[in-house]
Image (cartoon, rainbow, N blue to C red; front, side, top):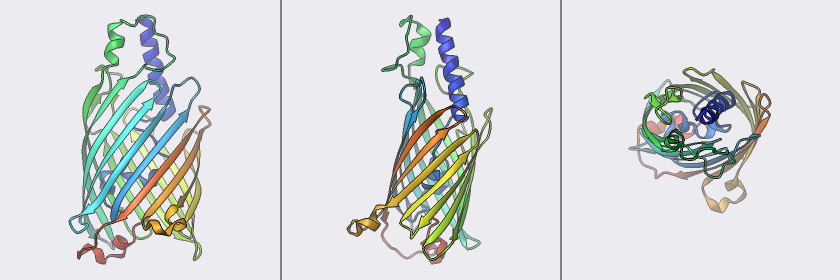
Amino acid sequence: MIKHYIFRLSVLIFSSCAFAQQDVLYSQYMFNQMAFNPAFAGSQNKLNASLLHKQYYIPGAYNSNFQNFQLHSPAYHKKIGLGVQVTNERSFLTQNLEFSAVYAYRIIISKGVLAMGVGFGFKQSKYNLEGSNVLIKDPDDPVLNNVQKPVISPDIQAGMYYQRKNWQWGLSAKNMISTFVVNNSPYEVRKLHLYFHSGYKAKISSELELISFALLKYAVAFPAQLDLTTHFVYNKFVWAGFSYRTYQAFSIQSGIKIDKIVPKLKQDIKIGYAFDYYAGLSFSSHEIMLLINWESHKSPDKIKKQKAQISPFF
């Protein structure tokens, strides 16, 4: 029993120190902002699908990774946005599965588009010891068996997202219902998360653009985190950049538009890659992203006359 609580404490310390948040951390967050802001749904004016995989390489940690899938699109003459997303996370010995459906309503304001969104879903959490190298002295320990049972809890999200031709910002909240992660432990309550994000696009030359992003995250009872990212985009075809995250985390990122190479695809297809190094904790990660935009059918609408709506930020 004592060993179990030592193991449990080590997981909590690891999770808090390594990530400083309870939600997963994305390096290429500018492409899948619906992961933390439901108001982003439909903002690309096309049917948008993305798949992202991140693999951590942490000394002594078993198979830490996560996957995120998103699908969202404008609807009703592009005045609303609808979307769904699924996230599967394995962090050391904790396994989380998250599903949410989101709705956003969009209005024209100050030559841009302001969206207000909400999301509803659930999260399933448990400890998963299968395949790990953790030695269990007493497999029949009732407490140990109990924490391996999945706990399903509801989740509510809300956010705002404003977008113009060359800049955007958003404010959102996740985990608005305080719930237990596993085993109804008061030490493992899922906390409210607040996000503020912004981006600005500047034209350096006829072929080169500079896009800067910032993402500020705060979770109750955890330190705040700030991500600062810069991308250089050449001819709207290939990009490369870097980012810094507080607590000595660095990332190098790059990507390419596949449809520029294979015009017959006739769709906007992007592949992105990010390598992260967490200097303060001496571990790294690889993140791969696939993003596909399908043209939605063209219908007359009032909101379409705005350039900010015809030419999304990305």
